[in-house]
Length: 400
Image (cartoon, rainbow, N blue to C red; front, side, top):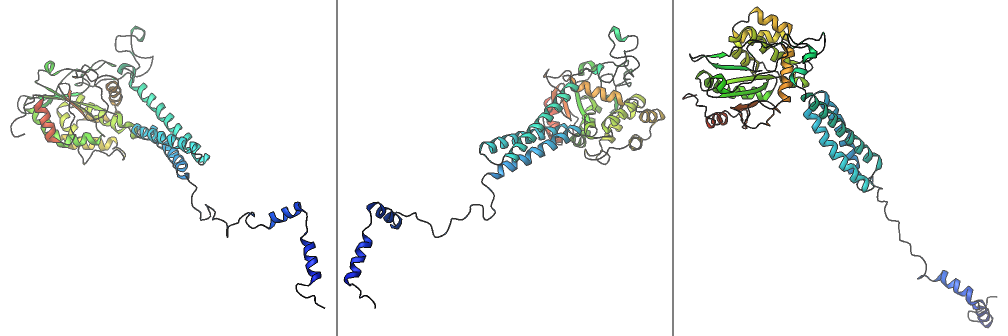
């Protein structure tokens, strides 16, 4: 039989069930009170990296690592091929170091950050060592670079420059100043200034315009592999020829060899040595020989292999109307290649002779000066160079 809803016995039992101790009632109420129970969202929040997105700041650490490794590679390549590239590596290394430090401070990924720091620091160290070695090589006097034997009549212990049995640096004739000095021949032509060959291991004897009996002296430092030297030659060769032929100025050309560092075949030294051979053996052909080596159809690019000796001889033969046997044998023997490299080192180790600024040094080519005042315009701006000559008092013939 079912008990009726609200019957007496049911009410009494219900009251007894509700008669619970206050402590237990409190615990029950805490469990059961929906307002005091912890609240749970309907669904958990999305994981911040669930969609595969990068962690915050990861890019700085990875950039530091990439730049550090690139900087180190660049610096190492620059040591063997081109010192300016080493400087680029050092700059990239500095950026890598800064980014690596920032990434570590921000607690980004440690391994890429440390790799960037290490690579950047190593690149800067390589660049510093390369720079120190380059500076040391430029700080040696001419007589102590390539020459090692004492000059004729002078023993090494009496002040000679070298040791026993080592070859001396032989000088060519007609280059006692260290360069090739061209003057007018009085009939509208150009001739190379004659001089005896100095003794082995001699030092250059630069001269001023007054010592040459000229109104002005234009000095040009160049490298036969230098593209800007070729550009200067194309735009200003006729201007220089007019200045010399008219008697307005003498022109001295000093071939350098520093671009051998970007060429395993020593083209700059061989070309400069070949010019010394022409000066020594066939001086009347020197002006045309110089122009031929800077002809854009012949001058090799810095990124290409230089011409071999046979190609040099063929070009010089074509440009000069025929080389004598003396020039040929001189070039084939590379008789003056050592002189060319020693002269290059002396030029970079010393201030420019007779410069208006006594501290002026050769830092690149072409460097062009008129009576010691450097031309600062673009190599390929012929109008600017003519204006510079006029400002220095070099009066070119009308119509040039």
